[in-house]
Every structure is written in structure tokens, then in C-alpha cells.
Image 1 (cartoon, helix red, strand yellow):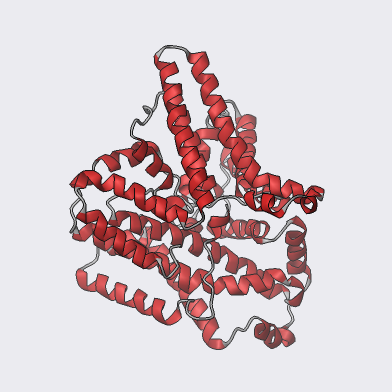
Image 2 (tube, rainbow, N blue to C red; image 1 turned 90 degrees about the vertical axis):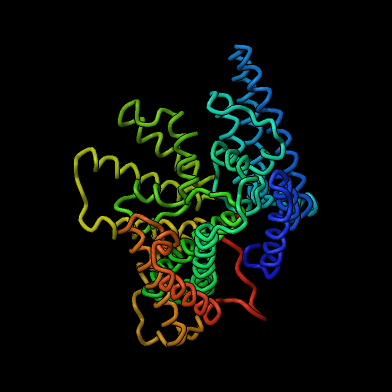
Length: 478
């Protein structure tokens, strides 16, 4: 939706209405706008969202009431049942179609029924928010929200609806209560929002969508390329998924800032991580922190010895892989990250620090992404085997580049774009600030030069226009 031609119109009209209505009505207007936004993905998406929201609203009230009456056993039962219902709903959408195809029963089932099992956009992300919210109400960390509009917005707020970030209720509800005091003109807020969105669109349209074309061709026919291009394809996907998902997150953060709501950071220069533990503190931060707080810590975390810590880590990452999708390739991806994390724990226990740790971490993550991108486990293993056994065929390089439709100009654009993102992330890493925030510390003249430069790159090198279908954000499928 962010990269559709309709979104700028929707956003401008929304902002005009938002600052035209009385301040107290702003949450209600966001409620209406979010309903309209969700309906763009189909009425079914909006209906399921509404049912889940109503269920969550009353479930939280029932859990809290049982807690207040000192009926801990009943409260625990209600919380477990409500959370289990959410898990079951998510599991059905994630795994039932896969199991039907695996068993061969899919051909005997009406197509309308199979279509109804296509996972609604945003479901995985707002169900995680529901589970966290109900768990917090049960543990007494937060009171059940009485304002249904607030709760519905918590799940459906359109800047974060498609792919997160997975927000926490405390911060989000508090910001909704303060919206009536938001000023129309706030130069700092507007400048920061514009920078986030501009940088996000640069990452998505100039880099991610450009690399997506090449990555698709390489992964669809690995037998057509040599080891060098297969390795390049894996590295390109490593950059593509980062620029795609981080680009989405930056656009969402910037868009939300226009409405006076700050969303949590989802990416903090992850490819500069010193080890895999550091990587997961920087990559998809809202998911990794959610998994830590609601699965890893309840399992015992690191409080029950080294073996239990390693076991809990493996469980968390296997569940993380299963959340991302059905199939053994996602389980393999989760297993690899669990294995990396366990090895990281054991190395730290022995005070062993690997040389070139950042490079090793980057390559390990890149290797795991092959399982994430491939269409299945067999495809991933086939790709890896070809990558290590095909060899380098310099004589065939022109033909392979022609197959990828790569010429000198396109290669230069890709190289320069990747270098730009690397340098922007490097500056942010050294200053401990993300690039959009770092830009705000510069003089107006420097900021404007950066703005104009990114806009020019978008217009000249962005992948869009007649005859081209903009790639959907990768994490929409999860």
C-alpha cells in the first residue's frame, strides 16, 4: 500500500482531515481511516480484524475482573484460553493450507474454501500484540483498556498494520491520550517524519526492488549461473530483505510521526552486529524483544543453567522460524539462528572472541537467508550445493549477465546504492543514531542537500512506472 499511487492521496487527505477536526476526535478519525485502509486489502481482512478486536476487548476485561476478585486460577484459565485461541487462529492460517497441499487433499477441497485460508494481511503482527496485551493484563502489568477505539487502533493503526512494528500497549495508549494537544506545525516533527519516509522509499524503490529482479532470476534457476553469481545472489538477497523491511519500517515510522505517534525502531544497523546476539538486538527489534519477553523469559530464560538457556534459545528460534512461514526451509532458518546463538553463548562462556566477528556474523546471516528465500528446503540445498560446486565460469559471464539483463550502468547503480546505504548505516552506527535522526542534527543547508539528493535518486533510479509492478513488501506474506 505504501508504494501504491493511491497512498500519497490517502495520506494527504487523512492529514487534512486529521488537523481539521477537534483534537478530541483525532483518535476516532484514526479509527475510521484505519478501517478504510484495512478494507483496501479486502472486506474479509477488516471483518477478521474487527472480530479479533472485540474478542480481545472482552477477554481482557474478563481476565482483569477475575484478577480483581482474587480468583487467580480462573484468571489464569481465561488468559490461557484466550491466548490459545489466538495461537490456534494463527496456526490454522499459517499451516492448514500447507498441510492440505502436503497431504494431497488440497485438490479435493473447493477453491473458495482454500482462498478463505489465505492469511489476512497483518494478522501475524496484530495477533502477537493481542497475545502480549492479554499476558500483560493477566500479570497485572497493564489495566484492560476500556476505550474500544483505543484498543482497535492498537491493532489496526494503518502505518504499522501491514508489517508492524509490534507495538507495546503502554506507550501506544499513552500517545493516543495526548493527541488532542498535538500542534499542526512542528518543524522538528515534520522534518524527522519526512526524512524517515524519504530514506525508507530510497531503500525500497531504488535498492530493494532493483535487487528483487536479479534475486528472483538467480534463485528461480540456479543451474544457469556459476558459483560467483550464486554467491552474489545470496548477498543481494541479504541486502534486499534489509532494504525492503527496514525501508517499510522507516516509512511507517515517518508516516506515524506526521500524526504525532512515535513507533518503536525496528532496525538499528543490524549488519554491523558483532555477533548473532547483537544482530537480533538490531534486526526486527519489535519481534525479537517480543519473543524474549513472552516466550524466552517465561520458559526460564538464562535463570536455570547453561543447558536450559541453550534449549530455550533453540525453542525460541524454531518458533520464530515457524512464525515466518510453513515449511522445512523456515524451520531450517530458525534452527540455524538458534545454533548460531547457542554457539555465541558457549563462546562467551569461554571468553573466546572470534577475529573478524562482524564479517563472520554477516556471512552467517547471509547463509541462513538462503533458506528464507528459497521456495523450499530442497531448493535451498540445491542452491547451496551449486554455489559451492559449480565453480567460476569467466567465459560464460557475458551470457549470464545478459540473462540477468545487467549492463554496466545497472551494475554501477546497484554498487553505488549499496555503498550509500553502507555509509549511512556506518555513520549511524558510529554516532549511535539512525541515519534519519542523524540528519536532524545537521544544519538546514546540509539537510536540504540530503533531501534533494535522495529525491533525485528516487526519481531517476527508483523502480516504478508503466510496465513495472512494484514488489510488495516481503514481510506482507508473514
